[in-house]
Length: 338
Image (cartoon, rainbow, N blue to C red; front, top):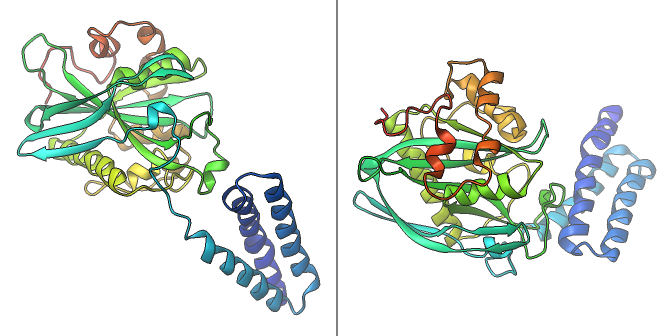
C-alpha cells in the first residue's frame, strides 16, 4: 500500500502541483518576478512533503489539502468583458432570430496592413435560413502536427442568379489583450477570455494568407444533411449570444477553437477523438468520418484544398467563388447544391 501511495504522489500529486505552480505564477501574481519565486517555493515544498513526511498517506493528504485550499481561491477568479482588448477582438457579435431571418450584429470585416496595424470595421448582416446551403471548414496550420486553427464558413444561396453567395464565418478564439501575443502555455490558466468572432470570410482568410507567411490554409466543404447544417449554424448563433451575455475563459485544451465548439454540439455529434483536442490532424479525422470529399485519397485532397497561392492578393469581388473554383468537394459555381 505504501508503494501504491508513493506512486500516486509521483504520478498525480507532482504533475498537479506543477500546474498549480503555473497558476500561482500567472493567475495569482500576474507573471511577476515575485510570482516566479512563490511558484518555485510551492512546488519545492510539495516535493519535500513527499520526501520528509511519513507515513506516506499523511504526505498525500497534506499535499492535497494545500491544493484544495488553493483551488478554493482559484475557482473564484471570474472572466470579464471589461479589459483592454486587441482592437480586432474588442467587439462581441450577437444574433437575433425573427421567423426565418437571422440578423448577426457586429460582423467584422477588418483591413490588415499588418497583424499589428488593423482597421476593424463592423456591420449587421441578415440571412434567410431557407437559403442556407453549405458549411465549409478552413484549417490554418503553421507546420505543427499537433495544433491548427479551424473555423467555419456558412454559405447562403444568392438572391439573384449570377450573384456571389452570401457567406459568414465563425472563429472561436482566445480574446487577447492589446499588445499580447498567443501563448499556449499561458492559456492553460485563467489568462484570457474566449470570443467567437463572426466575420466576413475575407477577413478571416486574408489575415492568415496575407500576413501569416508560415500558416497554410486548407478549405474543405463538409458533407452534411440539411437538418444537420441548420443545427450547426444555430449552435454558432447560440455560442456568440452566450459569450456576449456571460464571458468564459479560454483554455488551450478544454475550451479551445475545436473543443469549445465540439462541446456545444447538440445533434449528430461525431464520436470524440483525440484529434479534437490535439487538432493538428483534425481534417484527417473529418475525412475518416466521411464528411469531407472522398473522391481522392486524403493526402491528395489536402494538397488540392490549399488556397494560399490562389487567395493571396485577391480583390473583394468574387473572392469566395475564386478560391473555391475547381476544388474537390465544391460544385461548379452557380449550380444549386443539394
